[in-house]
Image (cartoon, rainbow, N blue to C red; front, side, top):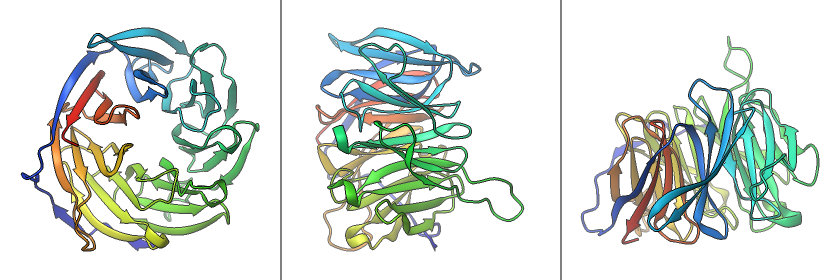
Length: 351
């Protein structure tokens, strides 16, 4: 296992780049937000999920719409367990929302009906910390990572996981497994060559070959990995980004599957980097979120380990922005939720 923890540099904004980011809508909610996602084929609608309050074990699904420049809540549904993560990827219908909850269940709801889940399986012991999806119809798969440290891959047509990967054991003296905090698919150009990238609470990052069921590569970045993102999830992946508890982002080059640690970039002195997200319309651009939202672009330089350019930044919440999603239809339109129970819609111009 390689170590990427000691390779660090400081980044200053690139004054030559004319990009601007601003808050379009700031909406306060009574709920504790864990995830937000835009609805596919409904570019002005989104879903927010989480807990009904910080002290409650009950969950909520809220569907909202942008109407005449304002946010309108369409409906809110309560459920018995709080939801930790959500995705619209890898579902047969565009209205199928996959959710992981605090009781260890993977559930799929049709949000047009939002009655009983159309899929409901025990996925993990403890919280389902993260999930991701890829494909559609017969080729769709969902991957989940849990508090039990396990990674499971699911075919929504089947009742149990099609692949199950045991957790990473804690270091000597500890009991149980390391928490798996983040998962994402990559290399999705065809179903047989997919990989899963996973990040853990101790800083481990692992890339798993689903075809051969082996570990292609791993490293440790020295701090808990909050989020991993691939630049091209549904085709051949070129880059991998990880955001960590200690306020850094780590960039990795995955060309020809020769992953090498790139520079660790100090993003925040006061907040974890809770999410990193590539812009769907341009895989050279990505966002990192913590107490602020920062927009980056990979350098055009051919030099190896060239640091990305900081295009724009916006201070949002001292409590921390914990989830973010780019709109798949409108380039530069972002959606985020924060620990201070606010939903914000952001517009970035000049991308």
